[in-house]
Length: 446
Image (spheres, rainbow, N blue to C red):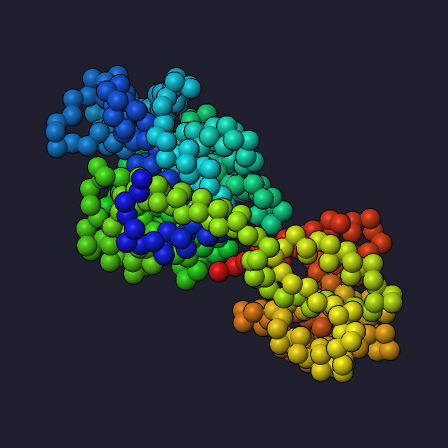
C-alpha cells in the first residue's frame, strides 16, 4: 500500500484532472521499465544499450553510464558502426522483444487512467499494446528524425481518443530514431527552427494549453537537452501549465540549481517521492474518485447553471433538442418556461441570470419577436456582460436562418462554428452533440 500521505491534496487534485481528461503524461526513459535476465527492473533503453555494448564488444568502465545515447555515441566515435546500422540494430532489438518482454506493472496502471496525451521518449510501441489490451481507442504518431513532417492528423475537438506521440521516433521506421548525442543536437536544431516542416507539430504543442496538468515520470533533468526540449514544447503555453516530476529511485538526484531553473522557467514541481510510489498513490486517489462519485451521483451539485432563451411557441423543438443533449452534462437547465407562476417575468429572469454561468439564446427570426420572447428586452445587456474568463458565457445558437448584426453578431461564441443553422439540414443531433461537448469542456475546466 502507498505510504506517502504528505501530499494527499496534491494527489487528489491530479487524480481529478486525470479523470476529467485534462492531463498529459510524459514517459521518460526511466518510466518504461522492463525485467532483465536477473529479475531486476531496468529502463528498456538501458537494456538496449547493454545489448549493443555486448554485440560490439564495448567494454565500459564503472564510471561510464550504460545509456543508449552514451553507447551509440561511443560506438560512432570509435568507428565501430554507422548511424544507419545502429538505427537498424535498435529497431531489431525492439522487434525481437515481441511479447516476451515483462513490463513494470506501473505502465499498466497508468494506461488504466484517463490521460489525454501520452508523450513517449523511447521508440517502442508498448504503450499502444497496453491500450490494445483494454480496447481503449488511441491515435499513434511519431517524429521522424530523417524526414520530419510537422503535420499531425488528429483533431482534439472531434476525436476523444488518447494521443500517443513518440518524440524520438518509432522502431518500425529505423531512420526516425534519435540515438547519439549528435542526433540529439541535430534534433534540437530541427525542432527549434523556423522551418515548419521540421518543428514539432503545432497541433501538439498548442494542445498543451488545454490539457494543463503535466506529469513527468522517469526523467533525468540533468540531461543537457531537456532544457531546450521543454523550451520548445512549452513555447506558447508557459503560463498555462502545471508540471510535476517524479524520478525512479536509481536516478541521480536533481541538483538544486537545476531545480531552480526548471521551477523558474516552467513552473516544474519536484515533490519528494519516487515514481513508483507516486503512481500507486495516484491510482488509489483515482479509484477513490470512482467510489465517491459512484456512491451518490444524484447528490452531486451541478457544475454550472444554463439559461436557455427561446421563443417557446415557435422554437420549442430546438429547445427540447438541447435540453436532451445537455442532460448528459452535470448542469442545471433553466428555460423561459420556468417563469410560469414566478411573478413578474423580468424580475424572475434577472434573479435567474445571477445564478447562471451560461446563457444560450436559440436564434431564429421568431426569437426577435418581442411578443413571443420576453428575454429579448435583456439581450443587449446580457451580451455586454459576456465574460467567459469570469464564468459568464453567452453562447448564441443559430437555430434557424437569421441575419445578425451588432454586438451579438461579433460574439466568437456563436455556434455552430460553421454558422450553419442547427435545424433543417439533417445534422441536428451532430450539431447539438458538438455544442454540448464544447460546453462540457468549458464547464469542467479548472
